[in-house]
Image (tube, rainbow, N blue to C red; front, side, top):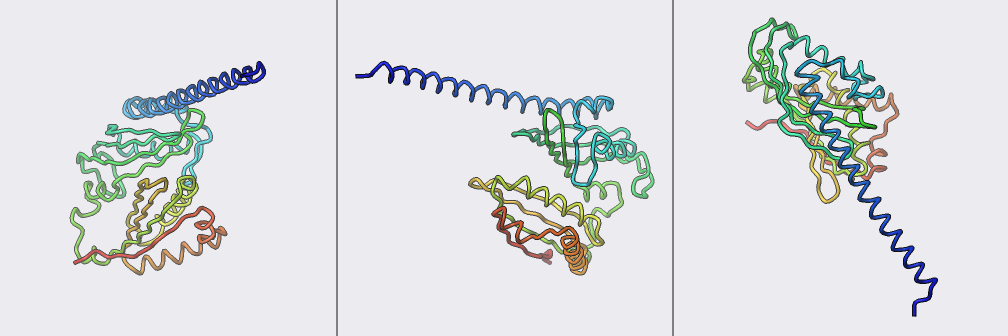
Amino acid sequence: MITRLSLCALLLAGNTAHSQIKNMQHKNELTMDTVQQHKAAITEFYEQMLNRRQLDKIDQLVSADYANSLGAKGISGFMSQLTTLLQTFPDAQWTIVSMAAEGDKVFVKQKMTCTHQTPYLGMAPTHKSLTNEGTGIYTFKNGKVVSHEILTDRLGFLQQIGILPADIAAPAKQEQVYFIDRFTVPAQAVPEFMERVNYNRSFIRQLEGFITDQVYQQQENGQFSIVTVATWKNQASLDNAKAKVFEEYKRTGFQPAEFYQRLGITMDRGVYQAGN
């Protein structure tokens, strides 16, 4: 027989459980609302601020705490590269090909079209119509963008303008080497790991013999498989880059082995050349 005390306990437990469920539902609704707000903000950024040049509204999107992997900070840091791009290609227009969002991040597959109307990297205006596809990754905090990264086909863009030949000579291709790392990264370690990857990428891009780099990732059974590919002019360039990176690690006190062990990351590495 259920006593009055135990009956009260059951009623209280039922009320508590119901309240927890309502709170969880409310939290999920808020999360979904926030994700939708992030997507709407990025849509407005492309359609209004970029394409209609309503750049006076940029402080509505970008946080004063903004920072990127190249060291640029604040709204002025966000605007620096964008301003240069718009000055160089004043008729540039962007299209959002697709968009996805999860948590605090919005992922955009974008396409830019423009005309080569002003000097670019020493190349006189060709008045060619250009296209450039890429991916934008925007990270939000408290409703505003605190960091972002744009990955584009830089090689293809330079080939369209004519700075690089459309068909790179075979001997040069045969000398190129591809430094490929494959990392298995626990999901909770991905943000810290990618921060280190982006630091390394910004560093090696300044080195002699660097051509291009890419990062690819996919989720597998709760972990992420992340592949980085850096293309170098030749083996000598790669050897020099390794020495420079080692010096940078020593200067900053970074210990790769300890870093990977602490985060539970495993890695396999190889150096490849194109086949004949």
